[in-house]
Length: 139
Image 1: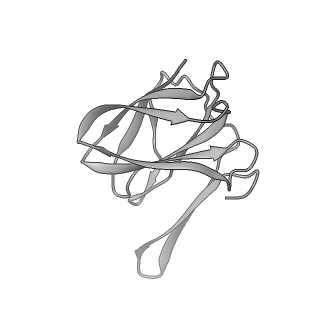
Image 2: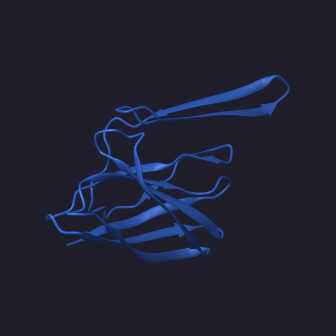
């Protein structure tokens, strides 16, 4: 992760002297609202994060995010708010426990004098199958 570059990589052993290297670069981020399902990339049990561009509709000191995810087993999601201009700058980090099946949770983001645009990183646990079903922001 660099100031203006988002990427993820994994190196997994598949047996003998064979390894699999995966490189994932995020060129164009999905924007809120997300109404179509997005599955998290899972390679040999290692799960890549998903980055979403969040732009508040009005300059207010509070932003409410309503998120719906599906998971194949109980897990803890890590949510990080990163600066849109410098991805290494983490403004907030929160964890959310979800059960197996479909889950919906609401999270408030507070900023002063207003909540600016940011990049939301959603990181599921490894060895899970996770889908982001919906992500809406209010107002």
